[in-house]
Amino acid sequence: MKKWNLVIDVDLCNNCANCQLATMDEYARNDFPGYSDRAPDSGAPWIQIERIDRGQGTHVDVTYVPQMCNHCDAAPCGAGRDPAVQKRSDGIVLLVPELARGRTDLVEKCPYGAIHWNEQARVPQLWNFDAHLLDAGWQQPRCAHACPTGAMAAHRCSDEEMTALALQEKLQPVSGTLDTRPRVYYKNLFRRTSRFIAATLVGERHGVLECLKGVQVKLILGTSTVQEAVTDCFGDFKFDRLPAHDEVYGLLAELDGFHSLSISAALQQSGLNLGELKLQCTHA
Ligand code: SF4
Ligand code: SF4
Image 1: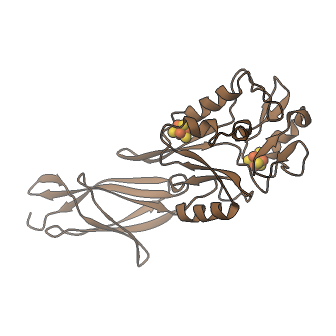
Image 2: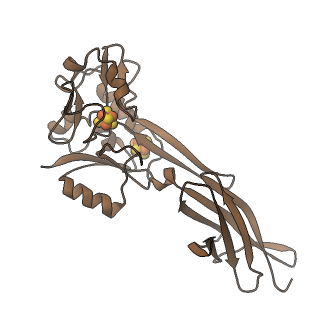
Image 3: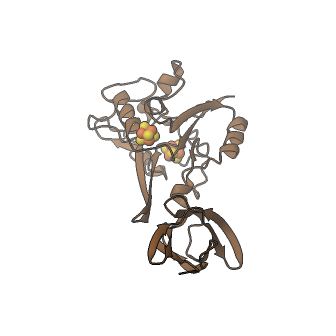
């Protein structure tokens, strides 16, 4: 049985909001009997884009994580158990308007906040994967179709094929703690869940500063080297994908002709910029 899944690569998302707008456009003033009532005139916030900032100053990265109904296979909202929340054989979750009308309680049942109350129609609603379009032969929902960077893509495949793809591409669900078996997967989610340490290495030779390219830098925890990096042409380096808990690391930078540099860094936030680190020339 082939089922629908959505993969979102957060590395490619630039927060253009086309996915949001395309979905709003699809449901504004449009009823789709058997699938969904029209969205509120004020717009349907069924796709939300979370922004995550890491780092400071010259070493910052910003990540955008579009979020919507995950079409969970073990759905706390009652999909497949509550007649108002239909779980289709192709994996898609639908809120049946006729049965869900007046059911404000459903809004609270989704731990992802993906069920929205439409006061105008007095009905709870969610992003339903644009099931009416897929049933009409579309290969992608409006959001993926409108995405200019290819950050979103729907995959219709067996669960076994999806599990293999998730392993191969290192895909993750949006939550590391909720075990609801989502059908929306994320790539490069480490940008949201992990920490980094970054800095810029400069060399001082006879009072003159220069960017140091090609310096080997080691990140040390206890007595083990946990990562190695090489500075780029600006002298920048970055250790990413570090666990999201407080830790004190050691950094060691070595380059022929310069004294080695060894410092410790207390990582207590999502991104730590150590600023400019100076290596002194041995002949200075
Ligand atoms: S359309 Fe694509 S790039 Fe734009 S916000 Fe949505 S996922 Fe990100
Ligand atoms: S994301 Fe929420 S509304 Fe969607 S299937 Fe999962 S529990 Fe239900």
